[in-house]
Amino acid sequence: MRTLAFIVIGLASAGCSKSAPEPSGGAASAEPLQADVPARLTTKLAPSPGAPAGPDCDKVCEPVRKLGCRRASECVDSCRQMADEGICRGELLRFYTCLGSEPAEHWECMDDGTGAIKEGFCEREQESFAACLEKSDVR
Image (cartoon, rainbow, N blue to C red; front, side, top):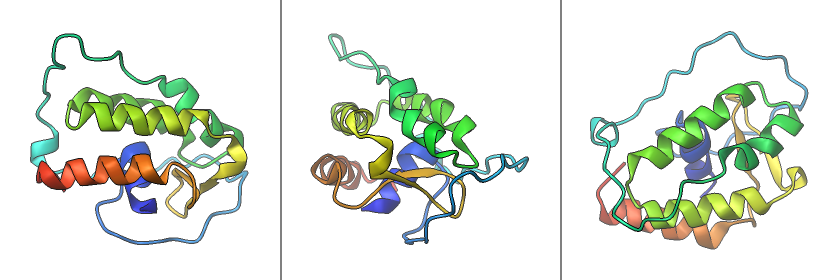
């Protein structure tokens, strides 16, 4: 389930891989984000009336900044972009709420420079969001 966190936070992983964590304190990368986002994810859907407000992306991304992950500066924009998609909004917001409640000690920097929640944390919320994406045929 770790790959889902990459997609949600970094919008950079399309495959299913588990990478070793990078050492924290890595220098910022000048390399631009090359998101491999399927076309069906680029269509914005309006939230339904009465839909909950968007996630607190600053709070979600705070642990990634604290760890000094190379691509921490991209986290808030990626978080907002994913929330704006409107796909599985309720499940995504529950997942982001969980992510925002986890301390930096429960996160790690990945080889690609993105931050990811460690295994064992927010798993129920990740699984719910992943199941919704599967039902929506979004990959």
